[in-house]
Image (cartoon, rainbow, N blue to C red):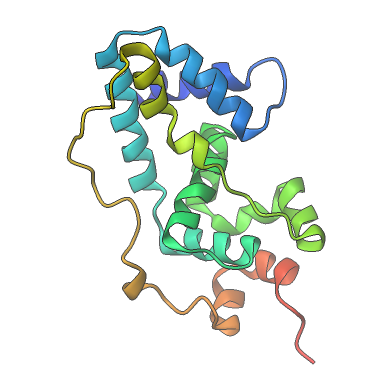
Amino acid sequence: MRTDDFWAVIDRATADRPASPGEVAKRAIADLAARDPEEIVAWARHLDKVLVASGTQDLWAAAYLINGGCSDEGFDSFRGWLIAHGREAVARSVKSPDSLADVPAVRAAADSGAVFEAEEVLAIGAEAYRQATGSELPAGERPATRPDAAELWDFDNEEEMQRRLPRLSALFLEPPD
C-alpha cells in the first residue's frame, strides 16, 4: 500500500469535521471493512511502518512530558492519538517533537492534566478485517515499532528534557526554585 493511500483513509475519517480519535477509528474501520481483505492487511502493515518511523526517543520523551509518564503501550497509544490527527501532525511531531507545544489541546493539557492516547486507532486494521471477514487479521512479522525502553535516555532528567524539548518542558515541568 502506498503512503498516500494509507493516509487517505485517515483523511476521509477526519473530513468535514473535527473528530475524536475514537470517531476517526470508527470511520476508518467502516471505510476499510468495505474493501478487499488483502487491502485491509496492507493498510495494517503500513500502520506498522508509520509506528516504526514515529518510534523515536525524543517523541517518546514528549509523550512522557505531556501525559505525565509514558509506558511502552502508552507511547504506542500516544502515537495512535497523533495518527488520528493526520499525516502532517505525525510528520511535524517526528521531525520536531517539541512542536507539540504549538497544539492547543497539548497546551491546555499543561493545566488540565489531559492524557492523549488512542489505542482504538492502532486497532483499525484488525477491527476492519474482523468486520470484513469474521476472522482475525493474519499474523505477520511485526517490526519493532519503538526503541527498547532500556536504551532510552533518562526522561526524568529535567536538564536533558529542557535541552531536548525546551518548549514542552516550559509547559510541563515545574520551574526551578
